[in-house]
Figure (cartoon, rainbow, N blue to C red):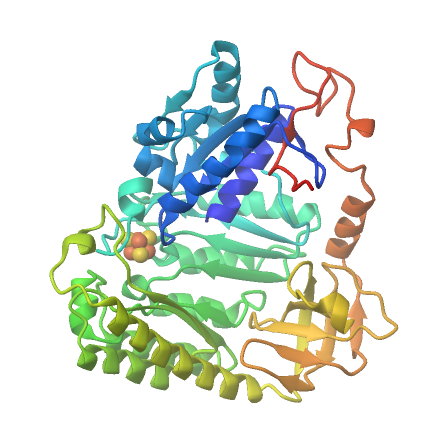
Length: 482
Ligand code: SF4
């Protein structure tokens, strides 16, 4: 969600005339899009702001803006603790950022502005998409649930659903630009439609995505077991471009803990959804989120989580050690679990998740996978002379291109030759390399002039120029020097 918000922020700023700072150059503007869900988010933000102070002093006119969930939570505190910050804005007024920056510049004074409700649906704002082949598409914002460990509802507000026609129009336009894969985004995609009175709207939306010519892959995140209905599983089964993967948060395998978390489902319900998914989509890879050490969790409750993990056989899991998030109901609950107990349970959970992921991945050995080649998925690609991408079930695949030259966005069909807990390897010659429109779009973007290259900056008044000035405002993080 935040990554897509960052694309909106970048798009808005580019629309307002800002240019991306070239690598290594000190930018004129730095925007922090913060997330309050992450551990020690506030400490990290203030630490980063502190580190920037010398750069700001040395670089006349540099502006710093802070937005996102943590800004919504901290509000005035940010400019009190870091008075060198120029703009603070909230989750409901992303669109105001260029105006606030201008006002801060004109008045030489920090601008702090929030709105209590969403004024403009973020999807109506311009976006600077990071990838020409794969795109996020918001279907809703906010959440009507009240999970006791989560700060999202109080910061993002109640769920607001976009109209299906608007979503499909956005996807159609993205496909027209070369995009092959979309990920539908919502805090709870399964409650999509509640706002306009159609409980089956999400399944219908998936089926409608199946009608979009040229759209090869549809994914979604996150589903919620409480609202997960059979029609969604049927839509996944019947719609060939909806991918056989499901990331469904479990959080705990103990009914008592789920109740304390205010997660309105129980372990049997969760497991029955998985069984149904596996009946209809036998090759689906199922992944999850799990929190260990929620207040009141006993060893017996934790054993329940391990038991569900064994039964569910997740392809992978994001595992978290519970820690207090200020402002959430769980922060003041009795029975906070000592850190050493949480750490011990966490280690045992990770070991089990790894063991099962290793076994599940091993079953893929020798299978044929269709990989959407991606940029930045394989950190060791240069050293290993492999390329990387995602299989249809979202497993990470590192493959050897041999004499072929696929581009990010192209599709490579290849055979898995070995496996590891977190990825598959395919070292034989590919069975097929399909050059796609998305690969063409990636290549065209690569050939385009570097945005932010001052040699090639547009003339004042031209698209991409800065209103009222000939010097482009560079956007990004300061380069490391020395
Ligand atoms: Fe937070 Fe729960 Fe809503 Fe997810 S479903 S955003 S965890 S309140």
